[in-house]
Length: 245
Image (cartoon, rainbow, N blue to C red; front, side):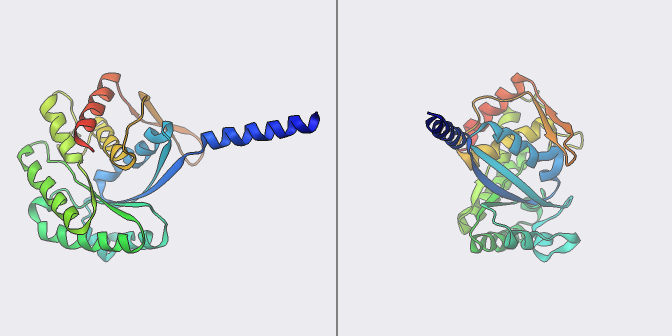
């Protein structure tokens, strides 16, 4: 009888463990402050905590960096080494926010080099298509077209963050996506970015969302990354579901 109970306990334990086990996707972001503002990589991880797929992010970033600097290893960047020595499933590349407008040829050159490099190590290249600045919304089609053209040329996947921002601004101008500098994202803007990546990588969004997002530091202490209202969350979910497929 005791032996049977032990076997039953082990069976239940294994079954529960199997049910709780998640798929993981390891992602590296190669970019600049549009990645590290408001802890985007941590937000993506927290949002996917309630999903069957957990996204684990790392980043290689310096403020204002462009892809040429990443490729050449300038400013202390070691993006190529990280890509080559770590088994990432996806590598997201993002150029300086003004490069699609001012230096399109540079974005194409280094974007293609990076995408080929990423594919050669067995990972998938994703392109982080960014948003127009607050005072120049008319540049969004140009930004989106540059990233989409590059993706078509090299077989990469575009995450159309800028298109999500454009729809959000058109639908509800009162939702402030920008930091006071008119370039970087507000907390709400970062949440919209995070949802865009979650939807593109996993194919769906969570059924439920928290309104408060806390993260553990290296000492096990929690710090608050973001707090949102239900109205803000549902608005962002609606926008992303319309744009990201």
